Length: 127
Image (cartoon, rainbow, N blue to C red; front, side, top):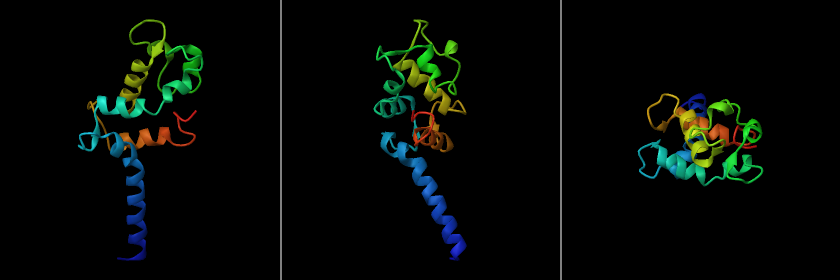
């Protein structure tokens, strides 16, 4: 194996390891993908919702949503049950749908890598 191919292999392994972090710890059935329940359980344990819920009222209002979640979508479309705020269940569902880019009902491969990117320092969910 040449030095260049060893470097390429190492980069591939490092990239795969980074993308597999959430998958490994959240993928309870070890099928290589995150279904909605696995995502909500793993993601919910991170406490990202509470970082945005500044007033700790268990819902995100328009101002709280505007403090970094605009990339997920416009607040007016985020209140799925129409109660006037985005609760943690809606937040998790909205983020699951964001990451399930192909609409397959699971988060896999490059979609998992996007979760990792958003959770990394200075990522969408690290605010």
